[in-house]
Image (cartoon, rainbow, N blue to C red; front, side):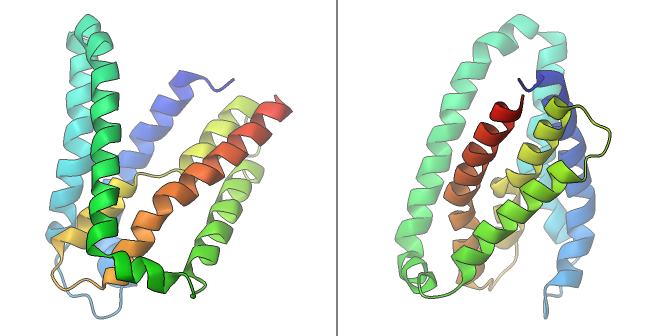
Length: 186
């Protein structure tokens, strides 16, 4: 069983690290992209850090309200995710079809396998339940945070949007397979 405390700690560290790292790394990693770190940071703050802080403050100040609101927020988040993916499919449908002949999807699958297995194998000295949290957390990063900088920059290649959107079902499948494997080991 995965301990909720480990999961919450991982999410906090990963979210803060991502918001601090991405604004500087994205312009360096993407050829021809000349935007300021602030252009990348603004949507990350709005999509990742502000909701995280609101949730933490609410849980700390009004735990009963947080417990009642959590199922509603979870349903709304799931619905918004489905709507966003459907809109991506409508807007970028031709690019989705075009990606079928490329190796982009296979590359993502291999990436999720390597990242999940690698983070689990390299978690030296951690108990199995903590290794599982680390591996599942690494393989299921927040794709909304990946979309945020894409939509903040003008003229982004639509193939980048398609690859991020494809990450949702691919991450879900990778996490499901990994969770089953980790569950069998515990």
